Length: 404
Image 1 (spheres, rainbow, N blue to C red):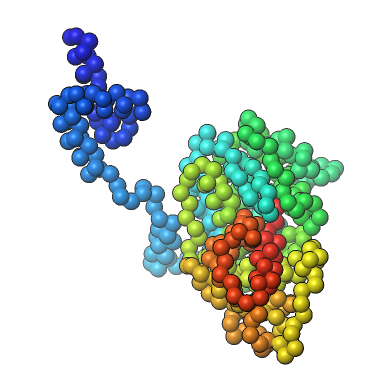
Image 2: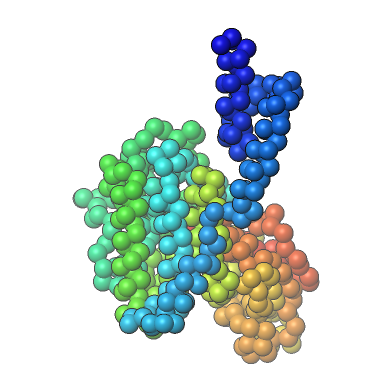
């Protein structure tokens, strides 16, 4: 067989892979040059390309995020759970399952990728196992409140600093491509307990392989959900060190952080990641809105330029100034947010306080991302009407609901 015939046969053997788009670029280029001069191969290539088109799927192979809930609903309709998870625990159950599905798919190289976690204008760069360590450490506050073991080891004669833990990354691996950017604001102060606990856990997990870190976190999430089912009222206080939330709110808060950081990891490894279901997103939005008056008070305490907010105008009534917050998207709703203290409610909730001084419209997912300090309040697309200073004040208060 001549060299020309051997080359012809070699190129013809690539037609199947080429039709499926599986040829390396240099082989595809050689084959396509050959097709322009060989009618026989060109005809075969056209037939194979047509057949490959029939094999292509219009829909992605990944199942929709709603499928899990649909299957669970069908199963529970046939046989109700002996110990049902309370409604406030469902977002956490769904978000931890979704993140676990992502983590199970990661290969060794993907565990080495670096996720970028935006926070208050800075960016922290962590590998997936380190992100899971952070989630585990903060979830530990719920574990302690429920009487479960603390995942964070006790400080041996002192507190492990974040700087000390930085030298023992989880898991052992090569240095990240670029050094971590310090978070803003500083991680001390009211967040000292969280940062110290996280540093101790990351140091303790330094020698573990990534999947072991994932398994530890996943076991804890299962234990938390089972324990939540035993306290359906959700009134148990959870002390984060800088503030206290009832268990029902703490679970929704942890679901929101799990979603936000799951998306951070998914973005780093180019993995499709669905947003929370509409009913779960609605619970997250409602929690953010309920906590917003506290964030406004914190903004004025932390930033002098907001401390001199105008007082309620004459005739505004005891409720003071209010802002109408309209949330768009799957978790759509409308709330009146008191700007001078008090709790947020629906459009008709609370004592009369006159017309709102401003209205603000934004997407529910963007609201949650802003509350996680993952968005810039000065660049977020927002519809606004009325007192622009009041709208800016609310936008700048929302990121203060986040923590390290």
